[in-house]
Image (tube, rainbow over all chains, first blue to last red; front, side, top):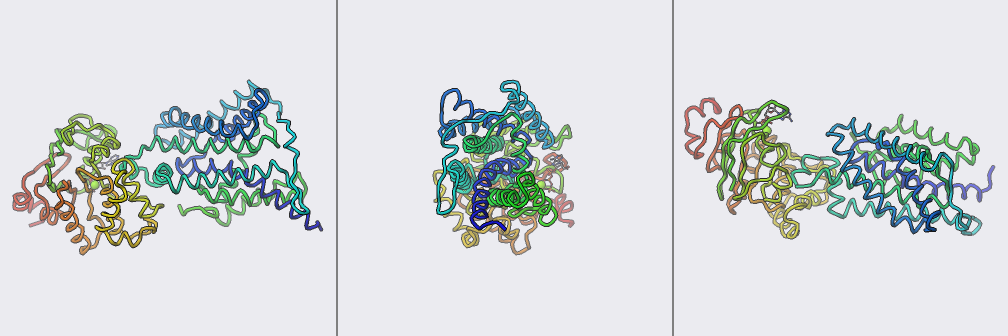
Amino acid sequence: MYSPTILIEAVINGLLTGAIYALIALGLTLVYGVLHIINFAHGAILASAMFAVWGLKTLFGIDPYLSILVLATVFFCLGYGVQRLIIGPAAKGEDGNILLITLGISIFIENALLAGFGSDTRSINSDFAFSIVEAGPFLISSPRLVGFAGSLIVTALLWFIMSRTDAGKAIRAVAREKLGASLMGIDVGHVYALTFGLGCAALAVAAGLLMPTFYVNPRIGGAFVNIAFTIVVLGGMGSIPGAMIGGLLIGLVESLSGLLLGESLGQIGIFIIFILVLLLKPTGLFGAKA
Amino acid sequence: MLDVKSIRTGYGGVEVLRGIDLSVGQGEIVAVLGANGVGKTTLNKALSGLLALTSGSITFDGKPLGGSPIAAVEAGLIHVPEGRKIFPNMSIQENLELGSYRRGRASRARNMERVYETFPKLRQRMTQMAGTLSGGEQQMLAIGRGMMAEPKLLILDEPSLGLSPLLVEEMFELIKRLNADGLPIMLVEQNVVQSLEIAHRAYIIENGLVTMSGSAADIAADPDLKRAYLGL
Ligand SMILES: Nc1ncnc2c1ncn2[C@@H]1O[C@H](COP(=O)(O)OP(=O)(O)OP(=O)(O)O)[C@@H](O)[C@H]1O
Ligand SMILES: [Mg+2]
């Protein structure tokens, strides 16, 4: 058997990683909940945000955590613009079109990154990446702790926006009742763009929190999006608390099954969960009935 | 208040409104009556900017009305749609708040108090999800949400649809009360008898055209109408 210390450390590490996963799932579930489509460009946007963090650090020496503030704003605006100027007009109201357009955008971004940076893997070197916090008998990686805190802050912020501001309420209104919302003078196109922008901003934050301990290459998004999609299904499509709880759970499962089954089989636990959820509770933990 | 001149529109090449003329004056209740599928809801959609006109003009409050729902709401033309279209995933309070998303935001608190005075039932259920309300309560919420935008003209599309006879009675009483404060109301209904009882004037629509119009009393006494709608 494993010593309790190792087990508890695995639990802690799982939760810390899970919070970042949750942050990546947040944008996916938000866009799904409001626009009712899976954004196929999600992974590519994450990869480009990670390259942006890497670039700011390598070229200008800007700290990844500092770059979050800038990049969240930039990616919000990019997301808003892409939805308002490209996806919205090109979709002509057909959800199927939106799917194809986001797929096209993801291919475009991935190839642009490949052309610009090649397929090499890059990372940021900093001392902070290896710094550790001692909590009793446990050793916890500081950047992961920062990542955890950052994810919780962003989730809380998003929850606040959605439940307390007119913009957030308009987003929730459009998610369920587009016609009713239009008749209140809510600009549905603006709300879609706002939602897409928020999803992209969350990815930029995730990129800034990930990069100190992770690496980037043009295809990195795919791996994260597979996990994020599992989280969205587990938590319930469109649910923000569902994404957070689902993320923490998936992080936990990944970490524990990695410990018990070995690194290479760690992901198996995630896919078992995915299939179990689909079988037992297809609407997810916090999902609304159809 | 509202002046509609020979508007035509439809869906994808199929013309539904074939040249409608109609007006609503200050302080009036105007009933727009007609059987299923004659184009009443289509008319409302055209007025509130959800549906573009192919020809004709809409003048509201002395100005031409810009062809978008945002412009209609900003001008104070508020449309309470058929089927209520409330936000089921949000509380009553939030539904009302969103009523003043575009117009009347500055006096949101005061207007909400007024809505709650008009509909005490809604106050008791402030935090309840709107989707769990009964049909009658949902209709009240839809009207209350419309009132939050400080309407200069309120368009009600079949407010009595799906209500029990007792509630229908209550609904028409309420419409009369809203109008007593001077609010002009365009009442779109299939419930001919009760609508004509509270309306000042009325229009009968058939097949996308106004076939009869005049004072509510004259129309109620018209032998053709009696035959067509009341089976007398
Ligand atoms: N979105 C739409 N697309 C195509 N045709 C439509 C659409 N909405 C309504 N129609 C058609 O337009 C005609 C008028 O419909 P409308 O809803 O305006 O009728 P109505 O008078 O409101 O009827 P009811 O009393 O049943 O509500 C109908 O023949 C209907 O089939
Ligand atoms: Mg109708």
